[in-house]
Structures are given as C-alpha cells and as structure tokens.
Image (cartoon, rainbow over all chains, first blue to last red; front, side, top):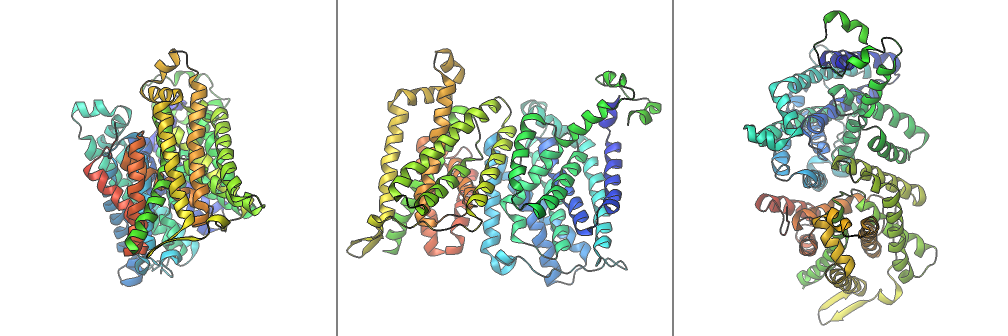
Length: 336
Length: 284
C-alpha cells in the first residue's frame, strides 16, 4: 500500500508545503531559501516536459532568462506593478516556448534534443548581441522590487514568503494539469506516441501546449530570480542554466512533480555548500550525474521510495503494493 | 576583396566545423549514441596543444600528439563506461555524456585555470601569403590544406576500406554485422576513438586561431549540432556541405554584422528545419 500512497498527488502537495514551511526553520539565508523554491518551479516545469511528455528540453534556460529580462525591463522602464511584470514574464516564456516547441518537435528523439540545445545557443547570442536592451555581459542591473499593495518585499524573508505562496500556487496548478485529461494524454504520448496519434489525439498540439505551460512557469521562475538578486544576468539565459535546470529535474527524478522540488533543493543547497569550499564542485556533480544514470534512474525520489519501503513497520503491506487497488481511507495513516 | 578574404576564412572555419561534426555524425550512425561530450574532446585537443607547446614541445609534434591522446582517452572512456549504457534509452546517453563533459570542463579549469590563453602560430607559417591584392595568413591556408587532405582520407577510409565497409554495414544493422563474425565491440571502440580524435584535432588546429578557454567545448558542441542538424545525421557529405555552409555564413556575416555572426548560423539552422525538417541529406 505504501507505494500507492507514495504516488498520491495530495501527499506530494503536502510535502511541497512542508518544504516551503521547513526552509525558513532550517536555513539562515532567505535568499538561498527563495532560490530553492524558484528553481523548484523551474524544475517542475522541466519535469512536465521530460517526465510527463518524454521531451528532454535543453531550452529551459531560454524561458528562464527571457522571464528575467521581461520582468527586469518592465520594472526598469515602466511604472507597472510587480504583478503585471510577473504576468508579462510568464507570457514571454509561454510565447517563446510555443515557438521553440513548434519548431523543435518537427524532429524527434535525439534531433529534438539537439534542436533545443541549438535554440538555447541562439537565444544566448541574441541576448549577447542586443546589449542595449539586455545589458550584455553585465546583465540588467538595479532591478527594483516594488511592494505588493501594503506588503513590502524588501526583506529577504518577506520576499521568501511571497515566493513561497507563488510556488505553492504554481505547484498546485501544475498538479492539476498533470492529473487532468490533458496530463493523462501526455503520458500516453510519452509511452507510445504512434498509438496516441492513431487513437486520434492531436499529438503535436499537445506537445506544443505542454511547452507553452512549461515556458510560462519557467518564465515566472526566471522573473522571480531576477527580482531576488536585483539583476537579470546573461548567465540566466546561458547553456549552463538549461543544463542546471535539467540536472535538478533528473537528479530529483521524473516520476512526479515533488521529485523536482527535491532535485532543486538538493542542487541549490549542495551547490551553495560546496562552492564555498571548492569552486570546482561541478566536477563532482558531473560524476553524480553518471552515477544517477547508471544506478539511480529514479533519482532522489526513487531513493526516498526505497527508504520508505525499507522502514521496519508493516513490511508485509509493501508486498501488496504491487496490486493497484484503491486505498481504503483508514489505511492512509499507517503507510507514511 | 574583403569578401574573398572572408570566403577563404569561411572555408577554413567550415572545414574545422566539418572535422568536428563528422565524428559526432559517424558515432551516431554506427552506435546510435548521442555524444554530448563531443565538445569536450575538442576542448581537450585545444588545451593539449596549448599545454604541450607551453612546455616547449614543437607545435607540429603537439599537433600530432594531442589528437592521439584525445583518441586514447576516448577509447578508454568508451570501453570502461559508455559500452555499458548503449542499451539504455537516449536520455541516459545524454545524462552520462553531459556529466562527462562537465567533468572534463572542470578538470581543464583545475589544470589550466579559468582564464585560457593563446597558442602562437608555428614559426614557419606565421607569415602571410601575398597574391596581388590578396593577403592571407599562411597558417589558415595550411589548415584548409590539411583538413582537405583529411577529408579525402576519411572518405577513403569510409568508402574504400574494410573498416569503412563494416561501419557502413553496422549503421544499417549492427546485429547482422556481429552475426557475420566481426568483433563489433572493437569496431565500436575504434570508431568512437576516431570521432573523438577528429574533434580533438579540430580543437588543436583551432587553438592558434582563436586561443583556448574552458568554455569553448560548449560552443563547439552547439556548432556541431547545428552542422549535423543541417547536414543530416550519419551523413558524411551532409556534414561536409553543412560545415562549409555554416563556416562561410559565419565569416561573411563577420564583415556585415560582426555582433550577429554567430546569431546567423543558428537562424540559418531554424530556416533549414522549417523548410527541410530532415536536413539537407538526412535519411530518417
């Protein structure tokens, strides 16, 4: 039964909420805690493509960076409120993701992956070339962080609270998408695209829609990141941003959306710890990636699942878990 | 005259791109393996030439030794690690090779620092060729000549030798080839090492032109992908045509719009995908 409980969306949302509550209790830096949740959004959006649709996108940095620029430009050059800047960032992410998705899914498999990577290079050079708009190497500097109505977001924990609310809203929304008919169909596309097409699903449109949703969320995350650090740096649209978001997603595991929160948390916190000790910690990360591919294909979530399975109490019930049956409500408490 | 200069520049650059991409293309054709560490081999080739010449080794010797070391390292990686993951889905190929590329990049920074450096052009070729109004650096002409010879040699290797026949047959059906009694495991290692060695050589040849820096591997990977996407995966001729096309477009654009030169090659790729989703000469 445990496995069945572990797969419940409601559990994942409770876990995500627990993370949002626990971060301030265990972390000293509000900036770092905000960063965890911001990248958790980006990784969950990446997971919607990779885990649910089977699309390995090396272009997530495009949407993240564009979100940063869109929010930064709006707040620097207009007097529009913060909320509008965030919505514009999400729209920018969604629009560009639709375009990139539309072009990239013309090819499948490896070609698709190579195309997304090439597009991420394209947008990087685009941002680099138009220095007047993006600030080039220096990035967009001095992005303000205006108050939301009566609430000032100046303090790092005040901003964290704002990010945490948005994170939970986005997480719940992504869960709704994943459990909807649309989300179920994405799984069908992932598992057998030809059959899904033969049944009559407009597979292309579904993939492009998945891209648009992913792009919107990633754009929002990018905007929140720019507001967090007060800069929209060129590195937010670089290849390495796409790579990092992908790595977080894969290290977490692609089976469910909460796995991405785990992956982002692990990546952000470990990189913060290690980079202060040894700047070249990416070397270890590269090694970890190989280990995950060889021995931990379900990621950190898979590890957590094995841990729960191995808990001493009620070992027998784990055998039954292979039978997919609805869980009687009274057994819910025991499994966790 | 400036356009002729840039055209010749573009041919040189394009031949380097061909050298870089053809290995990626052959490896994919035979092994159906996506190598995201391909740019790392280019990076290593460039840094080995940089290191060996800094240590006082003759440039020509470094140019010979660097690709051989890269090929050796690639053969080792293939037989220790990559061979075990061929049967896994592409996602895991990408994961492992992205991890490898990251490790190589960080190792390069640990060994040689984050800044990079310059490799001086070998003495015999540091001058320029003067033909009337046309003045051109000798080293770049040498690069064009050498890569042409290599391209012909590679073509002969693929079309005219037993190894080439095995590679082409293996691209069609690797099971059939191994049933015929050919030691496909060794062929795989050899092809992987050859592809990586060519990327290493491209890096080594490029080093005196563009210098070395730790992130040139990522850039090279992006360009190799563009060449392969335009030319069609697994196609020797496609890689040659697309490599030259990309090199020439980039060079000519350097005159017209310097900041946007690299932007244009990705834009060109987008156009090809729109009009010819399979690339110029792609099969599948």
